[in-house]
Amino acid sequence: MKINISFAKTLKVAAALAVVAALAMGGYFGYKWYRAPAWPEFTPAAKSDAVAPQALVTVAGRDYAYRTADLVQAHLFVKQPPGLVVDPQTLTVSGDFELTPGPSVTVKKLDDGSVVYRFDLTLQSFKVAPEVVIAGTVSWRQGDVRNDLPIPATSVYTSNTYDGRPNLMEGPDARVSPWWYGSRFALALLLSSVVYAILLRRALQAYLLSRIKPVVIDHARLRAVAIVAAIKSGSAGKAEHLELDGLVRARFDIGPVPVSQLPEAIVPTWLMTFLKLNEPAIYAQDALDEAGRIELTAQAERVLRSWT
Image (cartoon, rainbow, N blue to C red; front, side, top):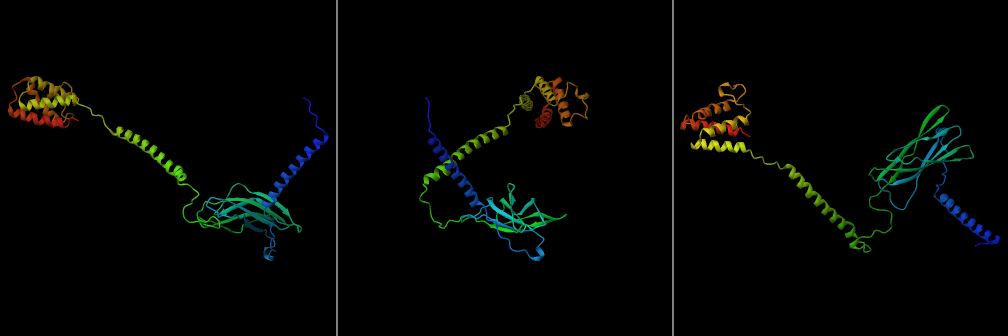
């Protein structure tokens, strides 16, 4: 389909777009002009300060108090007299504030040949105090001589309660439902507590299981205890004495070496004594009398105490 647009309609559309663009640009530059700080009038310098730049600081006002870590918008104005050179790149901020990010610099030339630098600063302080101070320096030179110009110390006051509103109301805020607080705080706290309790229970179970040591049943020792009890009661025979000898030798890593050939420097005395007392019962069943059984039993119990 062919569309015919007359020249008059095209001109009206173009005019409307031009008006919209002009209004948008006017609003933008008007806002920038409104937000831009006024250039101050510097007081005439004293004769002793006639060869030094002048500086002053202004802090953008707002209708509520500053808090710790708030971004503070400030402006530094430095007047450079004729014959001097201010280096904007040497600006440093000290005191209670730090500079973030780097400042933008605007220059204005005066009729007397002076130049005014305007630094638009964004400052931030993490110091918790009712009063925080802006300070710093900027370098200037006259010929080859370089000097530092101190920035006038400027205080910024903070508040932890009052935020600038004219009316402070006491009591609960009737506009906010208690269910809102419950859903935002109580419910979240309840759910997090349940999750924490589940995770804590699992962690404690894992910890307790890691602390439990498995019980290892030493069947050889249990058999040795039973044989010693039989010896004590007088019901043990040659086979039991021979078995006990083998169990003790296996536990304390002593080979099938006759007792007379065992090195006394290596085998403990109490173990050597037991083997000697038990040896007659192995080769002669009736060799041990009651006194011998009592002595062998006492020494065998000494061996069992060392059997871990």
